[in-house]
Length: 273
Length: 358
Image 1 (cartoon, rainbow over the protein chains, first blue to last red):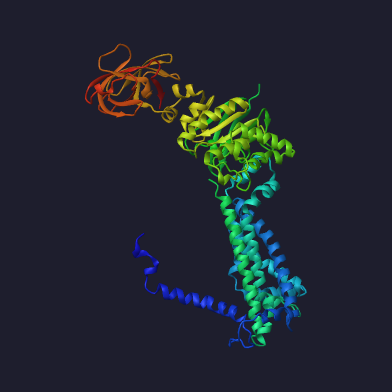
Image 2: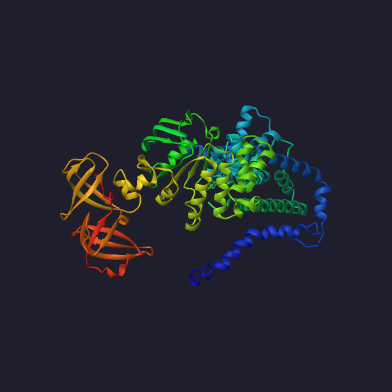
């Protein structure tokens, strides 16, 4: 390899990289470390302890957090399931549906929500819900989450489907499988890693959402992000750090899981073409 | 007796593009039938129409007398070996082979029995539990064959199944495919662009180009009696010598070449003196000598020589513009005695010169 083009030899490469990493990950690491702080202060170190983790589950705010966590997870799971099903159908229609009229428009309509500023979606959804008289609450959150998760689920699913040779489906039909069986026994298993990735992405996006949820959740219902925001407004306590650390670890676990599922799928796909 | 597959005036348009036109074919039961042609000639489209993946724009396709145009692929008693095999990556070898039987609702035991039988037939032995990614290209090819043949289709469609294999394996599989076809009695419709494959395996060949069937015949007929210039040129190697007809006596002609030499030739249609066309002469049906023999000969000057191991190929200059390729087997022939610039005589085997109209 020609050393002149080695990226490490560009001046400033190392310092810029370090700067980016520190800005990105420094705060996260500090939050993780201080979640084990024994002190009530968020800036002074008072020794290692798990008291704030205990506090989340038993402390004053524990009931609020538990309810919020339950809301968050149940909404995220349901929204992710429904949006994944819809996104899978959309991907099959878009990619295997041939050249239908309005294909480009459909693609734009599916992808656009990712580019629309979230605050706009939030306000618009709120206005829409109140106009039609839809009662704000868990159900409104679920509906909104399902809808804005669809494009996120669509991305990995359609990417996966695009990489699948259509001859697998033709072979299945040729071997007497009808449309449903072709999907059930051949297409779905092959695109499964994409579906799982889409589901996990939708799940994380839903779990993580603050802006839209905050607008349309209605009174008395909190999800984890809104609950954390509510707590922080009264001053940051170390228990928020512990809660954040738990959420972070959970996200890392999910992403890792989806990575390995994707990898396994690739190994399966890479039979000789 | 009805034909296994019968195509009548089949036409296929993709938008404004005509992929196939005027295709009329009768493929007999138990036949090894090959669709041969260069890429883009419509042979794969035709196969896909028989399988049901493409509909015909016009014409009828019959399978043992029954019209099948309205049936989706999963309702047609034909199976396909795909060019890229399309073996299901998430199933092992046995599950792949048994897939069609599972779709047909066979019991586990019945499936097991048939899969074992197929595994035996294509000699896959110990590989039944392997995933497709864990077996070689040649083995995948066998899985694809076994999978397509498991439901005992009346007609098996093979879409360039050997093109992904290396030469050695390809030659082995030719013999193997022929054996399978003979043993099972299934009608094979085989698509290829490889003339050697077509000649060595087929009972009959349909040569296609530009969406049309150019000629249908046995390998011998196709090779020895090509209908037109395209076929003479596409199948094997040939000399194409521009010529004018001198005299006509039925299908026997005397033709004049550029430079004035004349030659007896056979025609495949009626001709009149003065008509122009080409003479097709296969290089291996010609031989050269230094002394003048009797019979049909051409005289020329020896040009370049190419040693090919089993054969030696000579270029004989008949006139300034006209070169002739001659191929001599090296078994008894002493090629070294022939030097560039020597005057040589070219003997033409009986019936080897074919006149083809422009």
